[in-house]
Every structure is written in structure tokens, then in C-alpha cells.
Image 1 (tube, one colour):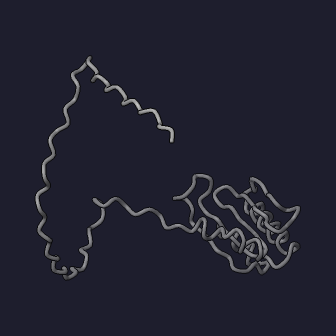
Image 2 (cartoon, rainbow, N blue to C red):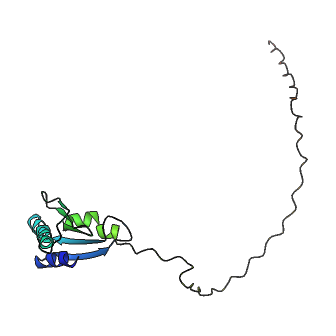
Image 3 (cartoon, rainbow, N blue to C red):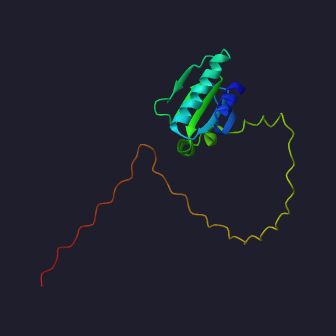
Length: 161
């Protein structure tokens, strides 16, 4: 990790952030995010990281985005380096995506903190309610038998005037 960070600092990479992401993913342990001032600067920074890794005996697993050079990713295995132009860095906000605190240990492993006691408000008096009137239960037809339908009333023929 320090080799990659030093390689970025050597070529004046700006706003270098090192994020521990081991608790978030199994792909890598560290992410380094850096800003370059131009496409040429971004490519030079990424190349310098790859070269420094090779010199230290750590061959990069891959490099992506060197053609456009707006965002170049150098995969060193346990370290992934993102070198980006300022516009791309603002747009993708990788720090916001990956800079999440590790989960807290379960409650039984850490001591509980007592919350500050708040004064309780006096309860409002409840209005007296009248008991609800009981309705007679509806009778159901016995199983197997259906209630007989009443015949519809016939309409009287209309009178002529």
C-alpha cells in the first residue's frame, strides 16, 4: 500500500485517500483514490504505480482505463488504486461509496451506555368512554342448507293518461 501511495506522491497526485475496505469486500483490502490534473497526468500516475509495484516484486494483476485516461484503475491484489480526473472523481464519489465504518461488535461484547434520563411529561387525562352496545350475533345457515331466496316483487304495469 505504501509503495503505491509513494508512487502517487512522487508524480504530484492530489487529494490522495487511502480507504480500508477489508470489512466491506473480499476483492481487496485497501483502495487508494487519487486525482490527476489531465489525461496525461492520470496515465502517468497509474503507470508510475504499476512500475513501482513491479520494482518491489509485486506484479500488477491488471490495469483498466489507460486508453481514455479519465479514470485508470491499477489492481495490485490487496490494493486497488483509482487515479481519476477531478470531474470523474466528483461524479462517481468513490469515497462516499467505500468509506463506511466497520460494523460494531454485538451488544453482548461491549458495555451498554446508559441514556440520559429525560423528564417524563405528565399523561393527559383520558376521556371516559361509554361501553359499546352489544349487537346480536348474526345467525348463520346450517351447513349443507342454503337459505331460500325471496321472490322478487312484480312491478305494476304503467298507466296510460
